[in-house]
Image (cartoon, rainbow, N blue to C red):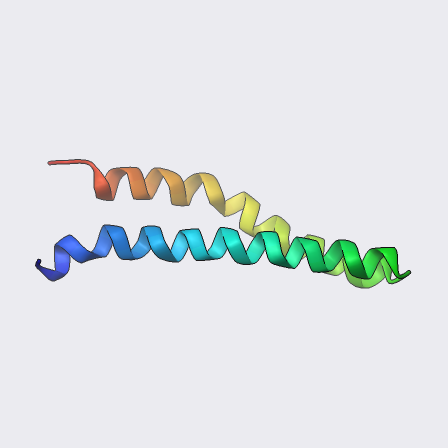
Length: 69
């Protein structure tokens, strides 16, 4: 398998890891929020918002990279 063939699956796996980390961080955010640290939870939600905003672009880019030529 060439390096060019490895790139799309590699990026896909990195993206899957990103989504898993996002979910784990959200769980921790909810836990922190329940314990009265609304400011910290708000800051984390702001950072997670960046992930959400980039999600559509990442999906479209993966589709282009994976599509047969």
